[in-house]
Length: 553
Image (tube, rainbow, N blue to C red; front, side):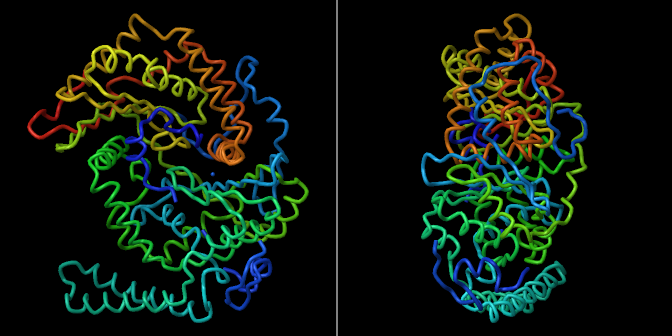
């Protein structure tokens, strides 16, 4: 789930993994305009989160084999749901202790839904999230619309000449580039910068954010409860009446984001090479942010096409948690979200990553801190054995109590950090059980890697995980989940993502039951099944001249 994914990864690891964290055609006189006091494009004032069968939509996993107590039983009874005629699902938890509510919208479309040639489009939807509509974000939509069309035409002409490659006319290219920039300047004159965000903040909005993952794209913030209708008008308007203004400007921002997070970072380069090596067929291997050539060539029309296909009511879930009434939520939902497209949800990714038959290795020579990434293919989160892999991550490298931390960091002092996690690159499809190891100063990364495998071999051969160790993990998870459930925004995120990734919101609760029902034998079985050399991908940063491109057991 979103609040626990990568929970055992360090800050540098999370920084290397993160390439996101910050969408918005209908008549201008929309319901949004009426609520916001906008009309005719003029600005007004507001009142106002391995190996499995080929996956389709995730199916609920079913209950665990025995009944256990998780501390969340009463909460589950408080969850209410409804679905609009167009297929948009709502999850509601009423909490009236404070006059605030949080929402979390999950769109069942992430970077795994990108296509060759347009990788990065799912992420661009996030960057378009608060650019506004024909009502919000513009000083004069009637004049802005043709200016944007001229910008698109100039971009297409420039791209056509660039595609001629060596035959391109350099003089013509220069003129076309200037013309494109001039049209961007012309259309930019009508942009009211950050108006959507400003209106939300003026209405009391907090924590305004969005993120793109391989599996989903999510949008979320919190508001005072008397701003529910304002929220519905703003959020539905962004889905029904989006304007992808400043698209090419924002595309340049993403190019720079990629340069900063991936190309200019040794850790970023390692994660990219590691991920590309681990996946030979499935789009998880693309990465989230997109390939450089795609980022420089896809168009606003490409983005709008992606939006129309994926941002349909049947492909989205909205969770509302806090001081909301179910009847009122139904009323505003029908009023503002009822006219969203009722087109069928797009199909899931058909490509299944073939079973890995041999170890894959990538080695980067860098002057930076040596580092190791080790990953084994495991099933998707919808697989009944997934809980065992989450436990394995904790027991191997979840903290000072974990086996690898005890031996490598505390006893032998050959590593400064060991972390393990599931959920990378995603959870909807078969992902990786992954590990990050940072060797201590002066230590040969390849020798440290061998020690990792030695500890794991000992666990398998003679020192399996104990009931006491597993019980500690179960206690920690129980506390973490109860804590997450106490936050409106966290609970909204957990429920919405469970609905999409796990196959139903109830799986948030069933997952905890499965974890509490785990046995050491199940954890050991998962380790023996997946943590084998032929199923392994290894990425290593070494200092120049210190190691060859070899290693492992």
